Image (cartoon, rainbow, N blue to C red; front, side, top):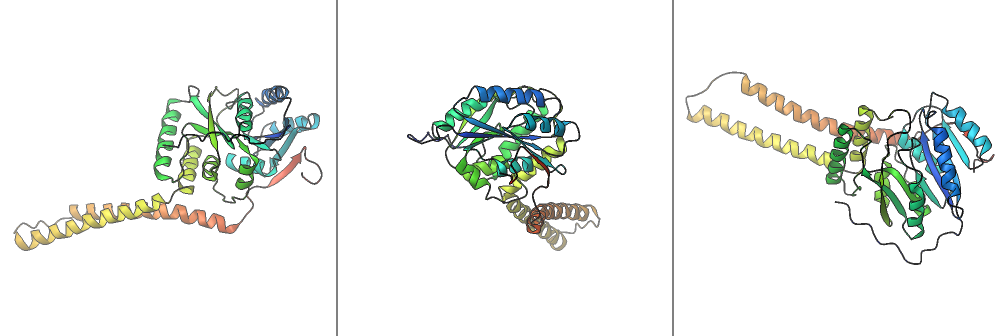
Length: 330
């Protein structure tokens, strides 16, 4: 189980008027962006002692999302937009936002309003108290389907058994991070990124804020089952080598069973007159050994594939357009 949150540090100094960067990855969000921008504006108006920048990362949208963001950047100087040349994935979009965010604190949240902007004010208060990371914990998941709730429980149970870094259950990427945490994340170049695991690995003082996760304001989920499985694999394989150790255990079990089978066959052949020639036992042994070998090869292949992706050193993403930044990109 994850450790209890550390107490806040007394006397931690925060800037008198800090800059808060809010990063919002977007993929086909035209139906919700107007409401998102309005609620972000109300959040900023309710925090007069903070400055804000809103960093939208358009992850290859095919609807009117780029046009809406372009108009928003033209009328609101707080809005910054990165538009990808194609879809690179939500975790890469978040990473791109982290790269360009200039805030003293950086907030990660979804643009579909399942991460309520109003909770950010509570996160800022906790950050002012001395915490370096404030993550949202879903007190209620009524908006999620039964299958999604069940698979989420299975995922967090599995990854916390396998990983050396505990990851709080019922959390997403909705969180506030102080500048020291952000600077460390920017030094982590891996390609198969699992942001919530990376933030847990970084350490520092972390605490949680429970919130009720509302239904999606508009649109549909961008995480079908296939993407969810890929995301779960990234989380487990990025923070644990226990699957490789599992392949060793499977090999040892198979070898032990094979030795028992050999001993049994020799005993029956030498000390008894019972010797039935047939293919059943042979087929069982071949299929069992073949299955174990394929599982082990698959596990090793996943890790080797990640090594291959890392050594190519390609850019994590390609930016087609920048909006709301000055000429130097600052």
